[in-house]
Length: 210
Length: 226
Image 1: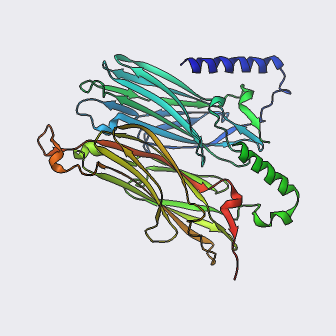
Image 2: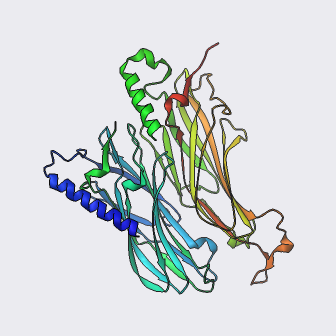
């Protein structure tokens, strides 16, 4: 958690540095970036269970879910403990640029009895590449509330889009419930929506292909 | 990573020297994945999202129902399979030699159970050979991923004969079962008294990425005509 806070601080200070330079002439960012297509599948988002929307500026998308819910407890099938939805995002970026910047906000509801815990996690990789980045949030019972988790694809994870080729970005979101420490107790976590967004203000997240 | 960047830089430099030096590396990919189809218990129609890169060199398949949960069968073995069939476009005189596959998923396996993920490949209708296999022994509860490549030495070279459209098959499977030696009599009576129950496992493949490995200069070679 503290690492993430450090990263956020770092990000903020970077953007302040970038801002202090002012003028777009100095900002070393590509002239455009667009989301050109989204596909998804997963145990939490079978076909027909998702509403999706790409923003008019093609920089952000929203997915709304009907059936994205993991649960564990007495009598609940074992496989219900984990649900996922992998989103494949096709990007249009200018030649000669590489990016590693995406923010994913996951919102949902979590209800856990004592001793039960839930986890929300995003892993991501560029199509055809091995390197995988990861962000996760763990929630401990007892609790009963809405939650929001923000996962940022950061420079620290060293996952950069490959140079010279167009490769889509894969973001695999998942939720799990674990009641192994309290097998007679139950818990559930839902994902109601996912918002994904490029944030061009952080110019540092772009680099030129050399 | 750094080495790869140097290779890229080197290739860029080479490409500036003119076409003669390029004789053994296609400047435009002479081949690619032209189309993908799939069928099997792990990938019924409507349960898969597919994405093919614009240069046709790599693809992603995402699955909604490539999962087995043996708790629904009192822990008895379960298996699902997805056969992926790719039509490869090949230009006369070139063939591809190196193909990489990344399988990503999740498994939760109780002690006493085993999960196995395997990828086979073949160029024809034959049974093919395994190019990747991962065995997860319970207790295990985590994401898994595996990268496998068809090694140059072992690969059946894609045919030089003629075919502009070659077929390349991948066959991915997941199996969860009690560990070997775990007999029915070892199982405990389950609550409903329906018979013995074995340790459970849940295993899923979330996605499969496959494509020509990025170092194109080794993924392709010229056919030598006799």
